[in-house]
Length: 162
Image (tube, rainbow, N blue to C red; front, side, top):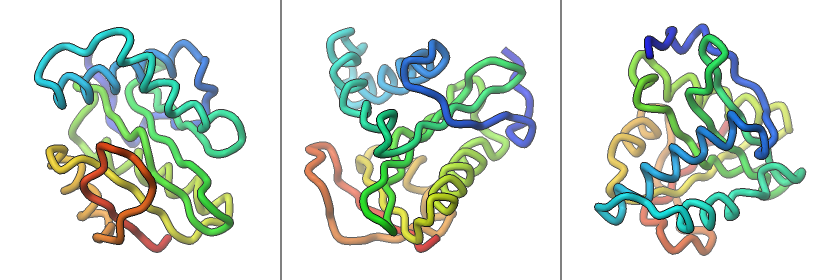
């Protein structure tokens, strides 16, 4: 698939039960789980992890879906943690859409959604092996912060003032 440049994408909130949202989330979780375990993800694992992010669709956050030429290509979520703090989560760009500033555009849209909500700080956590993501976040001004939450896979915690 020849994906248009990220600056032409539409990025908007989407319900988690939208077929395009489910498609991108499935690809995200499949890649994340497969990379962690070094084997293909199992359907039950993907279903379990999809349920872990379901709070993004019930007023406790927002799920953003990026489309290029009408096709789903990326996603990101922001979970509302407090009146001034959000958590960046579920950031993913499909393989065919990577490069050209795709991650930057997606994270920027998530930060804009947080600012529109009145948030002034963004937290995130990730795994140490997701070096590409860590490098992206650092280049966008995220810096190490104290651990938070109870995610058993979190190994790196970052923060940014919005």
